[in-house]
Length: 439
Image 1 (tube, rainbow, N blue to C red):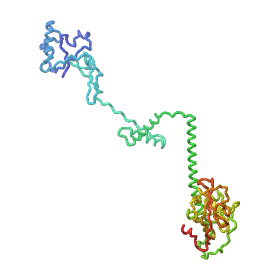
Image 2 (cartoon, one colour):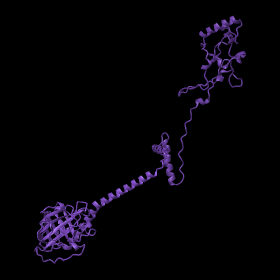
Image 3 (cartoon, rainbow, N blue to C red):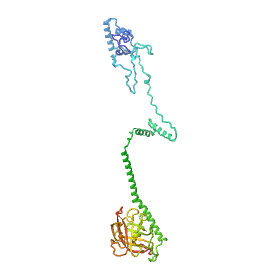
Image 4 (tube, rainbow, N blue to C red):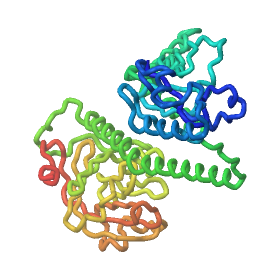
């Protein structure tokens, strides 16, 4: 085996009992290796001239010669011998904690006690020129892998088991090689950590709370107003049109139950019309071909029971006006311009020459537009007189007047359109007015 050999010098060997107590451990020097076949002490003495205990028998001169011979041996060793290395200083010696870590290197730890004189009680072979290298057994054992954390055990009812299963999927996903549910588990854990790390919301002042409440009230009011506008502009038209259409069909069935086409004689031998009609009774249908209007006419101009239902009202009572079948007078009507069916919304587009047809139980009455009044006061009842002053008529006759609110979406003023009867066609003739045939 290869062992460490003490350095030869004038001071004797490292195991010299006389110098053991006086020499400091930090000043000891390491020896060199020599093979097992190296000559023993007697042979070395014959080669170097030095005694086994490092003392020269010839005095100082002999010691000088022996030192020179030792230096020659160190520089040119004999066969089987290794060159002696320079002494290692105390600052360069290895300590127990001077370990260089590497993934592919086995570290040999040499404690400082290895450089001391062997203790007989230790289980180490005693030799004056052998240094034992002690390697702990733990250096050859790999570090144990961390044990994976176990998923929680599901206990309790169905909800508890479900939550435990979801948590277990998160645990598996968090381990290496986990199931795809691990990303959800990690994201869920990260979300919980973010919520926990979120700073607490500071307490709000009374002013901030008041502003928030006021803002919510304004938003609620805005939503209510929007719904009201939608109701007025859209839903009232839907319901009014449905009611007016149904009322018109009921009148047609009442006037002609058999759906006949008339006798073809064109005579006026039908039953006489009544001189008065009860309030809210539907007795005629008005057609305005240019505006695509067909709406029943009811007795009275009450807003809730007549006008808001999409019907056209006939002025009666204190403002009594003539009926279409009267020999003279002004047949005055009123209707909504906006919302609730808005039958008179576009009467401002009527011009002289446009036709207005009124159908009753036995006749068709055709009127021709002659003039209009764009704006007047709501209290100006002269527009529905038998001979309206601003209509251009000069003498009594069979006239029609249409009145409605103006401007649109307001009731600040009234407007009026006048017309004159130009055709009285009995239904018994089996024909319809030309205005209804051409549209």
